[in-house]
Amino acid sequence: MNLTPEITNRLEQLQQKYEAMGQDMASYLDGLLYADFLTYWDYIHLDTLLSLQSPKTPFPDEEIFIMYHQITELYFKLTLHECKQIAAKPDLDVAFFTARVKRINSYFNALVNSFEVMVQGMEKEQFLKFRMSLLPASGFQSGQYRMIEIHATDFINLVAKDKREELRNASVQEQFEYIYWKFGATELSTGKKTLTLKQFEKKYAKTFIELGEKCHDCNFNTLIKKLQQSGEPTAELEEELRKLDIHVNVNWPLAHYKSAVRYLHREPEEIKATGGTNWQKYLPPRFQKRIFYPELWTAEQIDNWGKGWVEDALADVAK
Picture 1 (cartoon, rainbow, N blue to C red):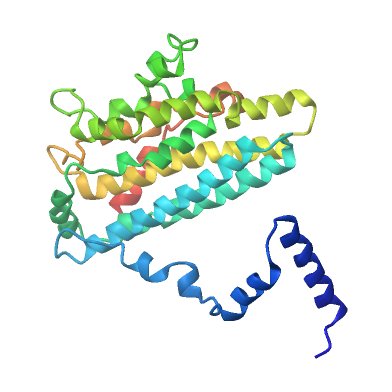
Picture 2: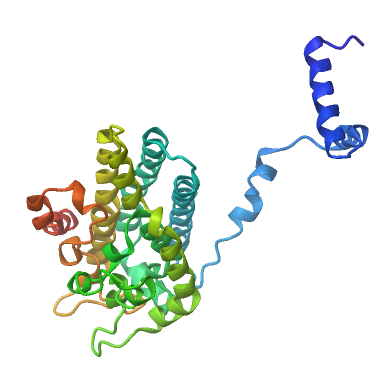
């Protein structure tokens, strides 16, 4: 058989590669010869993936609930993949930063738009029954989501708004004690930490504090400021970061709020979330005024942050 110059060149390159590592190329070629062709289902571990749904009850819609949250966590993993690339990039430039934030925005855009699966995709009667088998687990316990927040901004911007000025110069460990989401996981009646929060802190507190310290000089808010000072045009990057701010701090919480209103709103008292989270005050963005990039918004925009959005969400659910 005649070998083409292209194949001969490839073989020479392989020989150089394996020689440099002290390896025998012929043995690797034997391995290639005997190996089966790769299949789609093996490559993505499809059988394993489809076996990961284990409902706790016989209600059919619980499987929808499980799969949607699994899909959400995969999107969060995609987002963290981009966050890590941005943080680790030596000599980060505007083009690379902008391209990765655009990817993140596409992930969150898909997440927000798909949340109708949760708002409209389950029977309320089924949800209110199978949810009791989930206690005290809660979507509140998504560690990946908290990591995305830490990558996205200065840690102080995640502190409860009434404590930010007081703790501006404090350590990450001190600031963590007043991180905003802890106040959303308190018992509605007593104000004490829920078991959901206690579990969450036990598993992730050390990880979050260490990540916050690590991201001090490489979170998105710090990086955009460095690039602005470098003289590179940053208008497109600033616009993408504003979109990210809205996606994470307005649209995503509101999607959850709409779901909570649909499933947990009942007169004269609200139904508690599975983790006992105070969702009425925890989810609406106008209460938290959590903003990743305050310098990219006008004073009027910050003052009006979240106003009107909750009312629109309620109106949509009522239709």
